[in-house]
Image 1 (tube, rainbow, N blue to C red):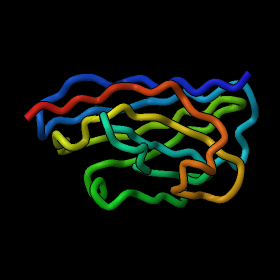
Image 2 (cartoon, rainbow, N blue to C red):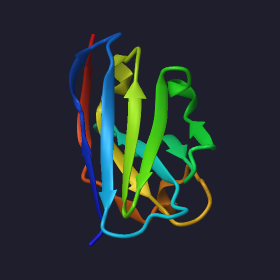
Image 3 (cartoon, rainbow, N blue to C red):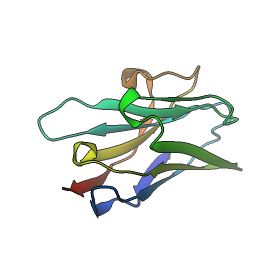
Length: 125
């Protein structure tokens, strides 16, 4: 059974940092790009960042470029995905989800096959 479990969310002041983690297990994730998405109250889910299997390719949503860094560690049948978030802003407040897909790297959430349950990030002003 495939499981993606996020952790690391919490409450932080503006300008602070958080590191989100996601553990993906339950199958072989060879050649699976992974991504982070977020959903704020009353808003649609939006793309944050994505990374290829090797880590060589990364894409970021414009508002997080230079502040967030996505990375991953690939182990046998388990992938550890991270999102280092620096210089956090109140507008970064949302539930953050990790996701995995088989196929090319993409920012389209509809093309991801597996999702975690989410972790809340709240940035106070």
